Image (cartoon, rainbow, N blue to C red; front, side, top):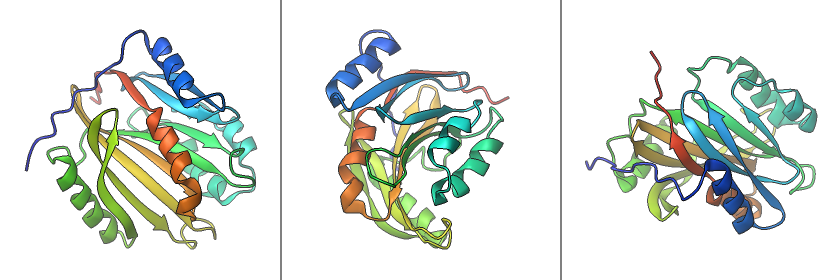
Length: 221
């Protein structure tokens, strides 16, 4: 296998200037914000203008109010409430309830320094992800490479059955970005209703606006 040699490549300017450039590129319906993460450094998340952003260490009141009574809230809020340790792989979540009427779409940033796919190239990683997710009993719809920030990354997409997700099936797209300075697997997931054709462009816009601008030391000792 080929070691993925991707070092995060910050754009020009400060993280705030990069976020402003992302927002300009995405258009008036979108914003972009810098997340300053104590463990993993600074990154930019794109968000539809009425969305809420949760960061690790914050309370979940704002996203709870936004998603009250939904299967998304029943599934995710307990996990996020427990993600208080700095060792959690979940670093930020964007929650949107305005783009699709009566539906929740979310983007989740994870960082994992021990992902078993770190030594694989994007094609091999996509194949490995298919095997991993199918071993969990999931029906994988896509496992292939995709393009992000002018580089090849791995994508896996699958449906989560209704019995797992509070009675509502969900469609998850998860993009994996290997970075070697410092070594870690970043991923951005788009969690959406189980109607992929309705959310392909929306999910992709979130990916287009995601940037790793200043990776941190990732000291988990």
